[in-house]
Amino acid sequence: MDNDPTHLQALAGHARMILDGKALEQSGAICVRGSGADAQVLLITSRDTGRWVIPRGNVEKREDPRQTAAREAKEEAGVSGKVSKKPIGYYTYLKSREGLACLVSVYRLDVDKVKSDFPEAKTRQLVWVSPLEAARRVDELELKGLFQQI
Image (cartoon, rainbow, N blue to C red; front, top):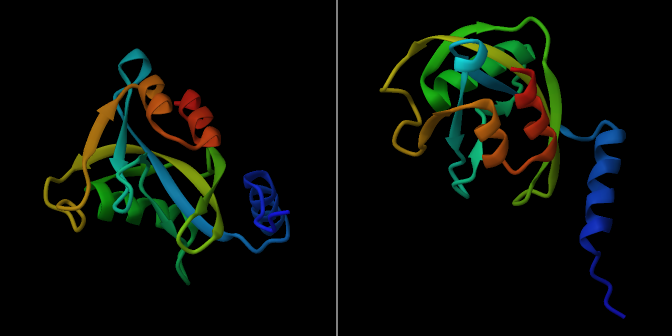
């Protein structure tokens, strides 16, 4: 019998990490422009796999999650604006290289400034799409649901 864990067993192990408070705390932003039926959200590609994601990153010391969401949006996508006071939700994902479970607090960021020159401009693609299209493009199931709140 093979001693390698099944995919489901691996996921259960990561869920246990999250429940035990051992997950990496991250924060991200769903960046929004426009409103109502005309609202669009910003997706960016991840640097390692090219998957569609939202700007997100580790919450650093002396930084609250709202600040992290704003910083990551500026660094990874060149956008800035007003960040919601409370998260619109959360999602989890597995950092495959490190084998870490990550818990991401997601904030709405109403974009008021877009720059074409930003720190990660050469390593990412950006696209503005409807919330429905964004939900189709991202892989994380919990994140898909958060686009319905826009």
